[in-house]
Amino acid sequence: MRIVSILPEFGRRYSSVSQSKRRIEWRPLPTAVFARAAAVLREWRQRSRERAQLASLDERMLRDIGVSRGDVLREINKPFWRV
Image (tube, rainbow, N blue to C red; front, side, top):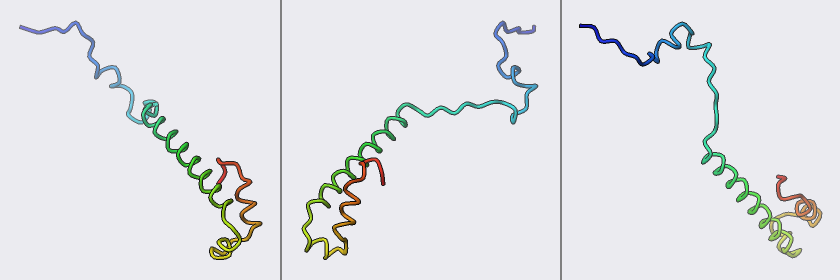
């Protein structure tokens, strides 16, 4: 007795196409996209906080860390997304 399947055989669909010629699409998982976006937002917020703290330092503290007022002004005038 021979068993005949009415379902298509999934393995045969690609049997004549070599593995290297198949096109594989890469799509990031939505969770990975949201995680990366959240990380970028946290980094921007941290940068903004650090620049605000730097702006609040007085001349004595700036001398202690070896930074001039000009360096501070240049840094605090950068947008939060710029390194």
